[in-house]
Image (cartoon, rainbow, N blue to C red; front, side):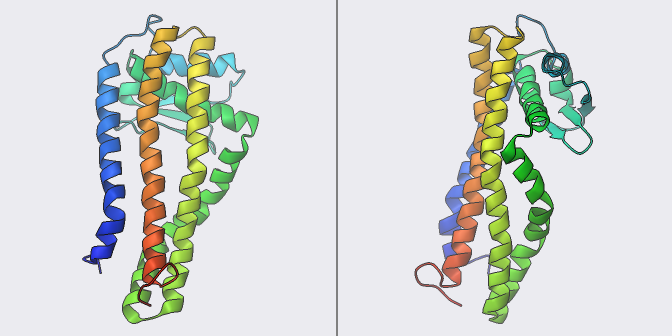
Length: 230
């Protein structure tokens, strides 16, 4: 099954894009992690300053283990920053921190795409766990119906990935605007911080493309797009 040439022809480019995106993120973060902002703020300080400037006082900022494991948890209203970002005093650190605060601002303002993504999370987790096994078992056993169910469940993953794009892009836009409005960075520094966020955005684009091409493969194999086997 996993040696199907069609699978590698269709999904191969997506894997390559994802790999290049990861390399770009690491190299860009490494480059600007050596550039200290004129304000001297750390990622944690920048996050707190932006939260305060927006009247958001019920979100805590906490350190988290790992490399670029930064995220905002809307359920507990916690903004968790990886160690390099939390303590780092660099344009890379404050850029990433501000991006996560962007999600907190979205949450506070009831940003529709974020609410939609949060709604899709449990369904997507369920779909991602069962989609592949159901599709492959269905195809191997010759059960078209089982394979279709797997493909439909995976479609939820595709929807989630594409809903994620505007959420992430909007958070980055808010981040740069907030960094400048609060005086944490100057104009030239904002342009450099934006490069870090643009590189990170590539990973979300790569994930969306990979999910879409995987679904295309499923549909091709089911004969629902062009030819294919049932």
